[in-house]
Length: 363
Image (tube, rainbow, N blue to C red; front, side):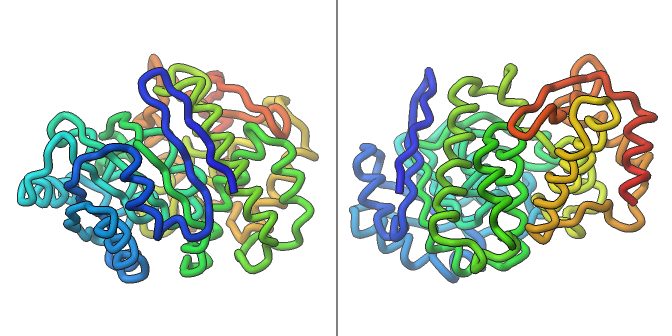
């Protein structure tokens, strides 16, 4: 499987995708000429599956390894958890040449990256994603951060990893619901960037469990999604323009996540809801057609994802929450809306009454 380069003005890095890569973690890190001290950050579930292998791979390559095991879940993506990473870094005397390694999903990756960005004003950072969602999205691009009680990812920094190491074999232990969450981000790439990827997924009868995907389709999903993210990030590292299209489905999705305390829907489920809403907005604004929206909804449902809002959620609260979104500019909420499968545009010309109408239809 391929090695994909993320080419940036500051420093480029590779996304290495191959079965068995986890056991090569130390070997691949050794080529980057990093310092000997490594802080491996994970959660109890992932560390139970893969912590020993990752630690052994690092030690065999001559690294001095310590660990920080954080509680599992989006609700723990906060400054309290970051403090725990800092405490371990101080206890083990991490230096500027040292490295923090994120072994886990998007939550662990975001927190480890933020800690790495801010400890000693920046230390090395390696992503070893263990969920489909983090493999295709969260681990790539250098967005790091934690949540604020009033909104998702409001506290953060751009800090690019030195390497993203993907081992598809670790998906064997991924719960079905988490696999489905990852498929939401894959569908997103099909809508915003890659018509062919979307078309290949349409040919598959079921996308809700990994066992229904052929090895070739899984490889295609990983490679094309990572390539899409790399292409966009390479053109716009810090979201000055183009990179904002990666937020397709995330504007309303983040509001839904936040208002349900990160415990009713997971990130991918929220993004699916947000994509359906964005598609409906685009339909009502005559930006795209009913057939395209129907295809998007069918693919989302095929991946086992919901197209409805969680029961009991307050629509006015969602609209209020949109004002705290990072994409608000001059007081206006910016939406990423589809114009066809494979292309989107960014607009701040979406009126509140139209948002309200679409959300009511999704109850």
